[in-house]
Amino acid sequence: MPLTDIAIRTAKPKEKPHKLNDMQGLYLLVSPAGGKTWYMKYKFGGVEKKLRIGGYPSVSLRDARKRRDDARDMLEDGKDPSREKKLEKLRSSILAENTFTSISREYCIKRRNDGDQAWAPATATRSEYLLSLLDNSIGHLAVHEIEPIDILAAVRKIEKRGNHESARRTLQLSSMVFRYAVATARLKSDPTRDLRGALLAPKVTHYGAVTDASKVGALLRAIHGFEGHVTTRWALKLAPHVFVRPGELRHARWEEINLEAAVWTIPPEKMKMRKPHHVPLSLQSIALLKEIHETTGPYGYVFPSIRSGIRPMSENTLNAALRRLGYSTDEMTAHGFRAMASTLLNESGKWSSDAIERALAHGDSDKVRAAYHRGTHWKERVDMAQWWSDLLDALRGGAAVAPGPGLNLR
Image 1 (tube, rainbow, N blue to C red):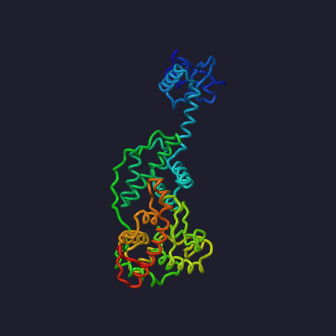
Image 2: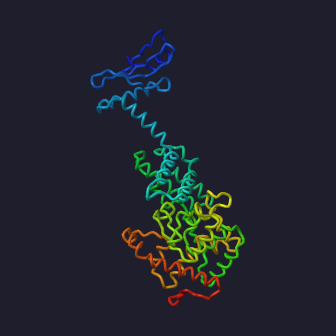
Image 3: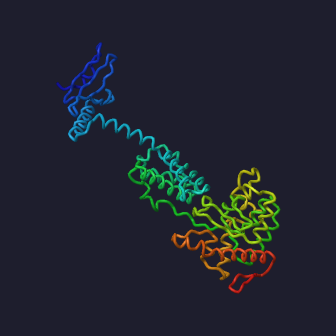
C-alpha cells in the first residue's frame, strides 16, 4: 500500500531500524533515534542494490517519488543510479573548486612560464592586478555558473570609475581565462564572446614626445643640466641614444652589455615581442656606459633603484625627472624618445624603414621576413646608431640641423 504524508509524519521509532514501503522499490527507513531517510531498492546487472535518495522532511514524499522515477529512467538507459550519483557528486565537487579566481591564478602562472609566449614580468604583474579586480564580484563563482551579465556588471564597475582602458583590458583578460577553462575541459564556452562592443571605447592617447628637430636640442641641453640623482641623470642621457622602451632601459643589466663588441643584447623575456633584441651602441653610448660602469658595474642593474641596488629604477623615475625639467606629460615622456627617433630617422631619408622598425623592435607578422631582417639590416643599424648619436650631439650643441636626405654628419 502506498505511503501517505500522515503515515510518514506519525511513524514512531523502534528498537531497530524499520522500513515503511512505498511503491516500485521506494521505502522510508526509520532509525531508532527517529531519523527518517528515503532509499530505493533496485537490481543492476543481476545484483540487488540500494540508492540513498535523501532525508525526510527535506525530501518530501512527492520529491522522493520523483527521484525514484528519475533513477528508474536511468536503469532503462542501462545506467546504475548509484554510480551516476557518485559521479555527479564528484563533478559538482570539481566544478565548485573551479572558481574564476582559482583558474585565473592558474592561467597567470602558465603565462609567466609559457616559453616563447610567456608574459614579460611587467605584463604579468599588470594582468594579475587587473584580474584581481574581479575577485569580489565573480571570483568566488564556479566558472560554469558565470553568465555574461555577471562579467559585464563586474567590468562596468571599473568603467564607472573612469578607467575605460582598464575595463576593456580586464574584459579581454577574463576572456583569456575563460578560454583557458574551455581548453582544460572545465567549461563549454567563453561567456564573454557576445560582450564585444558593450563597453565604452577608451580614448586613444599618445605618448608625449618632442619630434621637432628645432626643439630636440633644447630638451637635450635640459637633460645635460639635470641636477637630480646621478643614476637618473645617466638614464636620461642614454635614453635618447638607444631609444628602447622605458622598461627595457630600467631593467638593463651589465651582463647584457658588451662594450667591446658595442652591442647590448636584451633577452626575450624582457621584450614586448618575446624575442631577443640587439641594440648597436654608438661611441657616445659606449662613453656614457663606461662612465656609469664605474659606479654601478660590473654586475646587476645598470640603473639600480636609489633605495636598493637589487631592484631596478622605479618606472616613474624618468617621467618625474622630465616633469622637473619643465616638460608636461603632453610634451615629453620617457617613451617619447622612441617617437623622437622614429620621426627624425624616417624624415632623414637616409635609412630604410625596415632598419628603423628593427631598431625600434617592432614585431613582424611574417616570421620568414622577420628572420631575414635580423641579419640583413644589422650593418645599416650600426651605421644608423652612430649617425643618430652624432645628430643628437649636433642638436644639443645648438646646430640648426634639420634631418633630410642631404644631411651627412660623418
